[in-house]
Length: 160
Image (cartoon, rainbow, N blue to C red; front, side, top):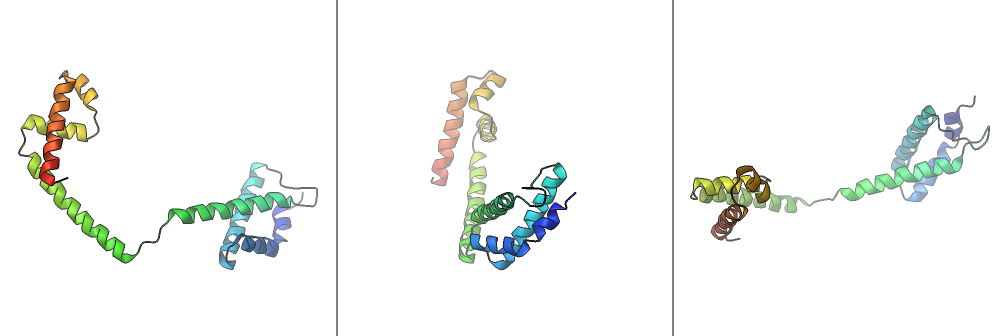
């Protein structure tokens, strides 16, 4: 039986040059080629035949494997956005403002009747007014009007 990985490894420098032509630097190209060896080893262990003939590896399969690894790397790089330190500072300041607004909201909510508070909390936690109406046998419009009254009142107090 032919050792497929050793046949693939004979063209190691060619694989690195190929990945560099995709647009990678040398270090990234070497990482991608190593990843390709791992993937091919797993495929061989699973029973996939990547041989073109008895003594020749299917180079198109290796090329497509390298290309897919490269494209996956580029997709992952797109997900990450570099943020300047000044932007982070603004976000921290906004977070403090949100915390102050939340505290103000809780204080204002305590001024409402206990029934109004409970309806508001239940609906804000994710239960729909329709579900709450079915569970409690309280009329839908009664619950809707209560929730809406509290929500509009809180928005006015917070100047939203």
